[in-house]
Image 1 (tube, rainbow, N blue to C red):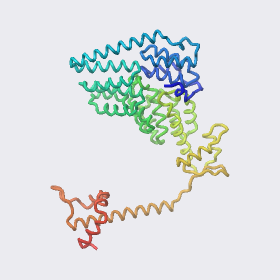
Image 2: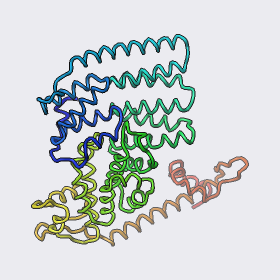
Image 3: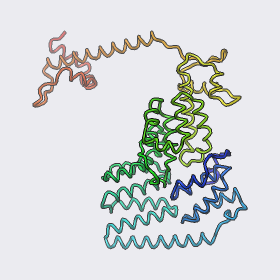
Image 4: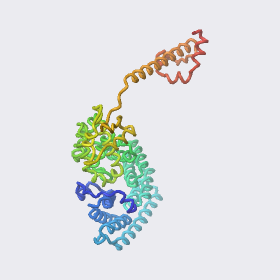
Length: 457
């Protein structure tokens, strides 16, 4: 990833979390990915994050990530000792990686020649782990995929699925993530294995759905995660992330009643909400119609969420959805609201919300009109007379359709064209009315011909 791409978002405000405590929630390659993102996004934490990233990369086998981390640090803090490449470490690590790859490939070849399926499966797993550690994710995914042909028990299928999902998430290949989740759901696992696997599958599903912009489905996935996840998913996500992702997606996509039942009254999700009390506070404010307080809490954590590897690109959309919902809910009880009161509740000091309201009306997100002369937002007048006429016409059309279907059925019976099922007698007249589309599509105007043949006028 180029530096220009990494610097597309710059966060200058200090975050509320402690960097070292934050990164301890994760294990594996996601630690390095998150440190690099923070180092290239936050001006406040850049130096500390990149120094940690250099140390993390040097403790592993991924030479390319180490070089990237050093290059980024040399741009931010060129005088730091870690900002200079350790050429000796690079050469030594590259030689070790080449020798290890050759050894593992030779062992795997020997296992295949001996036709030992379990050894072949383990050989492919070791090869996949090695390539994943060195950053060759394409070869790692290929090696893990080859394990499928040598599985013997359900646990092997689960292990393969976890490996493939972890690599696909790091590749940002969300189609592969969804595909492997479906395969895991179809695995014949024991109840204990399913219980242990549920948090991982739900978390991975939520990430894939969130990336696709399906925030309601993502919220359902995160909210359904069983408590006690612990560190079982820390290669991709932490329990704190579950609370943040689930809370924000629910606020953006669910109404107040659903938020109350699925979030605040959800005993399983409450375990995660306790880790992020500000998310619970924001949700409570929204449910209790304290919309400006809810938005203020979320805005105070914007800098933290912009440093999240999965949430960063969705944050503006999620915040916009929560804000627009808040404005709509605020306006619903009134026939008109002054723009000054809306500015006091939702606009920044010295700014106006008028342009935002106009865009919401254009997008049909807000059913109202702006009175610029009197500085009012007024609701669109209801038209009960037109609504009554529309409902009456709809009822008349349904009655006409039912009458035609009854006439058609009578003509069919009279013309002896009704199909009788063996041993079950003749279908009743009312049974036919439950299949409106069938009769209308199959007979249509033919009902008039049947009526004339049967003598019905």
